[in-house]
Length: 249
Image (cartoon, rainbow, N blue to C red; front, side, top):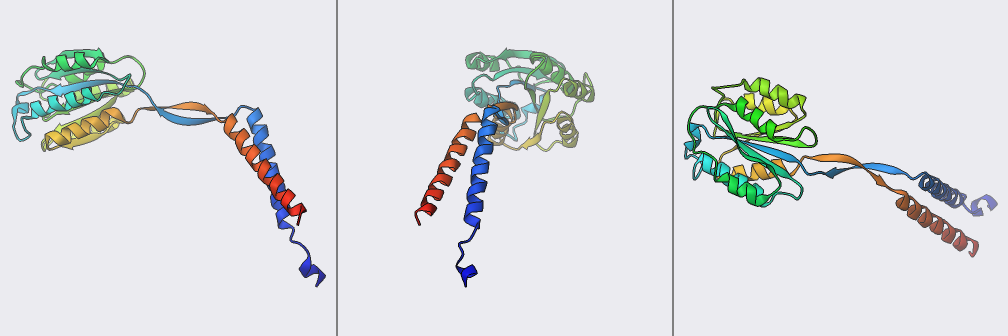
C-alpha cells in the first residue's frame, strides 16, 4: 500500500532533463553557433532569341516572334532588383541586341531593335553569343527561345559543353511541337537547367517569368546565438516554475 502511494519519480527526471537541455543551449550559445540557410541572389540572364524565318508562324498570337518579345518585355517590367539581363538574336548568325544591364528602360528600348524573322537557325552561335554577354562568375543563365532545329553554324552540342564547363545554366523553351525537342531537353539537363514547351503567348510569358525569377540561391551562414539563449532561458524558467509548484503541493 505504501508503494502505491509513493509519488512518481518521472516529474523529477523530466525537470532534470529540461535543465540539462537548457544548460547545453547556453554552452552552445557561448560558442557562437551558425546554421546554413539558402537565400536568393541576383542573377545575370542572357536571353537567346530565335529570329529565323519559322518564327513568323502565327500558330501563337500575334506570331511566335511577337509572343517572344512580349514575354521578354513582361519579364523586364518585373525584373527583380539586382538582376541584370541582356539579349542576343540569332538566325543565320548571332547578333548582340542588348548588352547586359539592370536598367529596365534600356532593356525595353533594346527590344525594338530585334530584327524581323528571316533566314536559318544557328542555335550554337546564339548560345555562344549569349554566353559572351554574361560575367565570368556568379549565378548565370541563358534562356533559349526557339522553334527550330539547328541548321547552320556552330554545333549546339559543343556550345552546350562550353556552357556546362563555365557553370552557366541553360533553360530552353520551345515554341510549337518541334521534333527536335528531346535534343534541347538533353542540352538543358547537361547544364542543370530545365526544358519547357509553350503553346501560347500566355504560356510563354509564364515560363519565362518562372525560369528567370527562381532557382538561384546560395548558402549563407545565419547566427543562431540569440535563439539558443532565448530557448535556454525559456526552458530554465519553465523548469523553475514547475519545481516551485511541486514544492508547494
